[in-house]
Every structure is written in C-alpha cells, then in structure tokens.
Image (cartoon, rainbow, N blue to C red):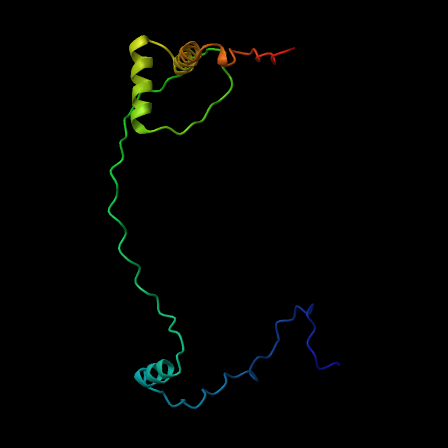
Length: 134
C-alpha cells in the first residue's frame, strides 16, 4: 500500500520514466472493399449508404403583398385567427381600405350585413336567441 502515489502529494519528483507507449499491433490483413460488398450483397445485408433523395419539387410562387402595418387603439382585445383564400383576404383588405375602416371594424360591418341578410334566424351581437315557447 505504500508503493502507491498519493493523489494529494504535491511533490515534483514523480518519475514517469517507466511509462512507454505500447508497441503497434501487427498490421491486419486488409480485405478489399469490393469483396466485402459482394459478400454483403449476397447475404442480403442492407447497405448503410445514404440513398440520394429525389429532387425537391419546383417551388410554388406565393402571392405575397406587402402591406403597411395597421396599428390602432380601438378597444378590441380578442383575437380571431382564420384561414381564408388569397382572393378573400385581398377582397377583405380592399373593402376595408376603400371604406377607411380598421380590420376589426370591417369584420363587424360584415357580420352585421350577414345578420341582416339572414334575417332573424341568427343571434345579434351579444344576444342569444330565446328558445321558442319560453
């Protein structure tokens, strides 16, 4: 037990002359890659080589219209996210711009017009229809 060096010993007289690198291993006989490939294909061993992916499809041109930011303080604080076609979005923006409305106001006008067109079958803003017979 006394032959072992202490981890906490700070002496500089540590002798490393007894440490030498290991001799290199005897060179192994190299098997040609063609022979390995032939054996693995004969045994139906799957290759790990990457298969070239198909070329990406041609990019579809996007209809992007740059608009100026619309920031208004209107008191509207509920967000509505909907998916529409590009044509519907463009028509909505054109109507709002032509009338000078902010987008929330344009939506309110659209809902009111739809309610008027459908008649009393639907609810109005904030009022639930009373059940018949009540």
